[in-house]
Picture 1 (cartoon, rainbow, N blue to C red):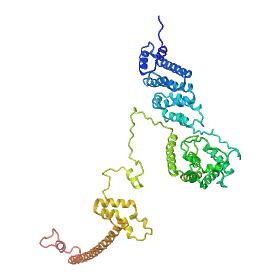
Picture 2 (cartoon, rainbow, N blue to C red):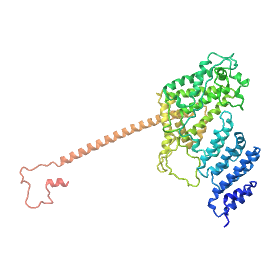
Picture 3 (cartoon, rainbow, N blue to C red):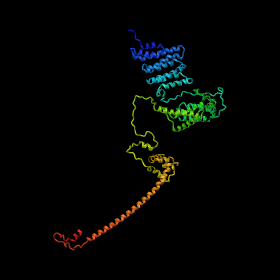
Picture 4 (cartoon, rainbow, N blue to C red):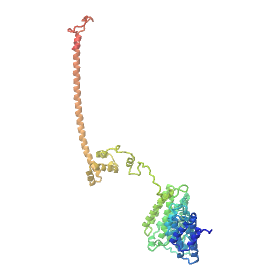
Length: 565
């Protein structure tokens, strides 16, 4: 039997042609028709990698120009399409890019890296397909960063880091630094003082900036590398003395405006200095340079922010004492004041730095909260939480907060009070002249004014306009005083009427009492008269006047006659 054609042989045979979209479409059809479709992805990855390797070999043996790398760009672009169609494993594209990095020199990679920046969004979509791809991306671009010089290739390092931030998700562990590690590998080496090494104009030098300040300043800069360096009490005391010295020295420099007008280094925006010279003969000029001062002061602000707000949590977290926080706040105010006075455009520059640091606070909170992912899965239905009738925020004062938290219904609510009921306590205070502080009166309370105006607008809306157009300092108090006078007069009239009514009621009660007394006396006299009529002669013997048989009704006895009467 004839030997079967393997997928790898098909790919190698077709990649000898110029890579085009039609070529890859035909290639996919041929691969899908092969007897063993399960090995399609592996064979396709191996064949494309062999094709890139042949192009890179041709590039190394001929003229090394970017046009020769055209087939490589076409293969990687079509690899992106094959990955999205699930004909290629997601990590294959980044393996191809890593092969290109290893085959080119640093200068050639700088030119070719524009291709990576152009397709950064496409690479990001591939990264989201599989979580294991992140490690390959970090390995390929991180390996390229290790080949570069931090002093001469600063711009290219920034381009690589920017591309990494676009390709990888924001919550990727490679960029979180959860342990809060600090890069302290930047060693500061002080230059030995020499007199013949350079010619420096020190005609404007002052006595407070010299070798002693030079040693203090660069010792201070070493401590700024790590906030934990100043955590012990002894180190904090030394750091405080150094910080006060640096800030006071920067405040005493008065030739900044002259240097800015003469064209200092702060105006050369295209110039970047990765490190400053540490010669003691330059320290005087450096303190007068706006570019130098801004770098130092901004670095000090970032250090103070890291000192007060650690972005880590748990065993790597640390907190400073309240007394140190007060000192840090004073340093921040002095540093911002120095930045505002540093030309050119000191105020605008300080506002920009303040805005950037305030935004950094939100990132610190996000990191302390566990670096939760910003990507939400739209396929999951939202979880509806039960609404609890509790005040969601502060409503202005405790009265409104309590009112909101009280679960009242329309049946439980009280009717709208009258205006007189609302203002009566204030009127009573105005009538009582014992209050020493007028500001404590109820009529000067904002809550009372709010309630009074609302009730007044409900019952007498025209009165609100009258009070609004009044020329009095406190129109509501003036109106209440007038109302108090009217109420006082009405109260006097009401009291007089009540007194007169009480007097008349007392007289009527006295008359009734006398009439009742007379009636009682008349009744008593009548009873006495009746009793006298009932008195008769009683017989001496018991048998006298008694007869046998029933009594005669025509001649009744005296006692019976008295009872009948």
